[in-house]
Length: 246
Image 1 (cartoon, rainbow, N blue to C red):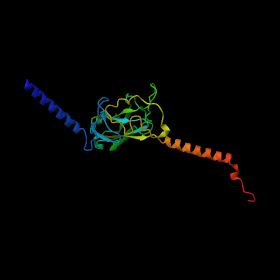
Image 2 (cartoon, rainbow, N blue to C red; image 1 turned 180 degrees about the vertical axis):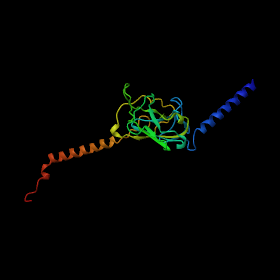
Image 3 (tube, rainbow, N blue to C red; image 1 turned 45 degrees about the horizontal axis):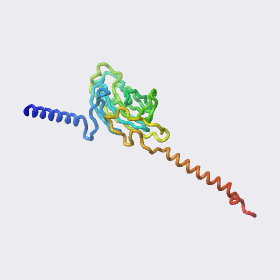
Image 4 (tube, rainbow, N blue to C red; image 1 turned 30 degrees about the vertical axis):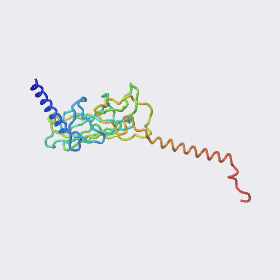
């Protein structure tokens, strides 16, 4: 009985050792991921402003996921290093898609999510800037909400003989503050499918600070000054009369 338990413990220890070694090998020296998932369920988690890399073959579907909070405007950038021109047989079209936590495809407000690389090109870069993430939205809408976002990178069209050639991808997700012009009320109960990603530094619902506060305070000061000026003119008009003989 003790022998069986010892063997079981040894097997578990070896399994854990191999698992930790595999996890370490999937990260670079700076801790950035060096592998990509092959589906939504296996999407590799990355942080904002973190560059992740992956080696793959043309025709593979590469998946990553990153966090985005309310008031942020996420931008995704992907660069694919292509094989030598002599090994390729023509142009190839690469495509970058972004989905929210409910796996709803999100439209790019700006950027170039589809790009055709010529046979002589050594790399191709794709970008996609989403709409501002809202703190809440109606159920029927397709508005971006706080939570995890998936990005998928693949070649959409290429010569059949080029499928399977080795490529290297580098992706990065950033998120700028949209500012008070996009601030709004309401709050989502919980971020969408965000268990595997790190929470943004300002939280899922964004920071309480907004440049709208500057406009509010500035407007209040101007209103107060106008009120004081109006009171002075109407209450003491003689102070502003021209002195006799002037």
